[in-house]
Length: 396
Image (cartoon, rainbow, N blue to C red; front, side, top):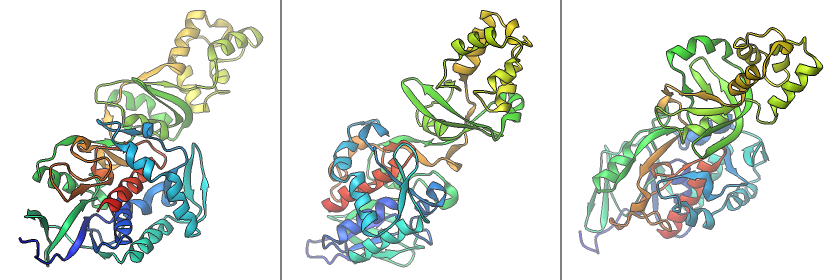
């Protein structure tokens, strides 16, 4: 294909999610002709369902340490050039009301559709063309142009952006398509794994713990050097809640996690004092001051003493191990079916951290979840979508 050959678009973006729409809006407003393609019938479905339908769109305290990648420095450039405060300013410009929930998490007061509408308006301002319900049959490179084939079109562009996410939540149409394109062009893929996902019990653990389904409590959960101070939720299948979702991004099959069920209390000192002051109190009733009643009752079953007065120092130490250092070896996770994001993806060593362009393939870019960048729970993954999308949009 000669340099004089007509190109249908300057930029084609595959994926009309958070990163793709942000990239299209920024590139279009810089004068680029942009086509955004997606196989889904509606854009940005992951935005729509996020945050219980209110979209946890960023985090006030988003920093590079909130991200996991085999190349931990990769996120720094994009996050510095398009910050959470830049996105907040955009939200405020559109008059979208929002509030801080906990730990810097920002949610819409109303429905998450307002964020989608904002992004679509930004794409309109950039005169983007958005084509939904369109399957991609193939992608090729011919000379300096990329050829994108759909059932009804053969399109070409100077720059191709892959923003189609990872395989998490397949019921929404998520797939590994972006990885296939990367592999087609010789890029390395860090093995994708479910992240921000509930962990499951072994069958042996499920039976005794089934009475705790629905119980929630604040805790500190640890794995290796990772530690999170959030809520834990017992389910019929295992453990969930923010603390577990967070640690799941670090957990590997076969590993144990450690849980402190009363992180704000020195139970050893409190129990020794209570043994003196209220010796007739039962361990169950005493524990229920610090834990949900069902959880206190479950743990107290492991204590033979009927009264605090009957508990030896060894009994107290054993109780503390159950409450303060509960070690659990999950059987696995609930997998991509319920994972909020994907850990792994296109190897960031293959990409420019400033532009998101593949170093070896001029004009080919990867942004958002398809890249080996996984944020903590609480708006960080959306901030990566905005930041990587903006970095790419500015570069192309």
